[in-house]
Image 1 (cartoon, rainbow, N blue to C red):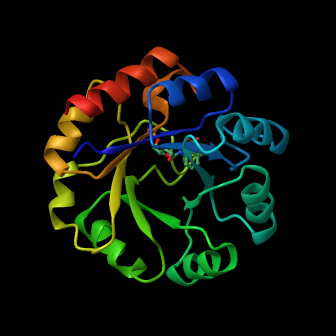
Image 2 (spheres, protein in one colour):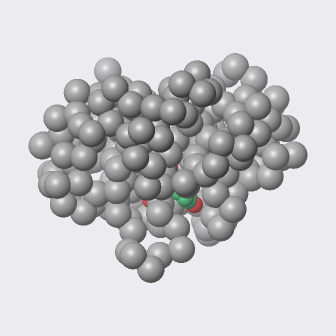
Length: 213
Ligand SMILES: O=C(O)c1ccccc1N[C@@H]1O[C@H](COP(=O)(O)O)[C@@H](O)[C@H]1O
């Protein structure tokens, strides 16, 4: 079965239409203010209503408080909450209980020990997304086009559904799927011409490469 696809960091109607046309399963809206892909509430309301039920809408949060997540869930009509910060398992379970939405926990990876941390979220999160660890002094914890050593995923034992992110593009996603068997692949900067500027052709090429993989 083809891997599911998430295109993350969508902030314009034109690029949302490209994601819909390419039949990705998930679109990501970024609620981390320092990100070049951050969306305002006004904008996300318009995007959510344009998308309707044609795609699952995932909100990306970095150590956000409940008030921000509540406003985003409501305004962006979110179907899932992606935690891309240092949220511990207890925080993931609290958010799952409070909002009644699937919680995706991102695990930043640079070693086998990081992959093992996925199991800590059993019973707390619904889905694990393995992404490359960004440098300590980086402005963003994701969205930097960095890859990790995919062979580390051979040790994946969380027993949770999981996906792969980090430096994926149309050029390497088939190889990533072949090497890891990822059930879902997620990209942001790999379908851009500049940080935050998504490219419709690159989105289509990415989705096509996943389906051919
Ligand atoms: O994209 C961002 O700006 C971002 C900011 C803060 C947290 C997460 C962010 N993006 C996520 O990171 C992955 C990997 O990005 P990339 O493909 O390597 O550019 C992306 O899929 C988003 O889920």
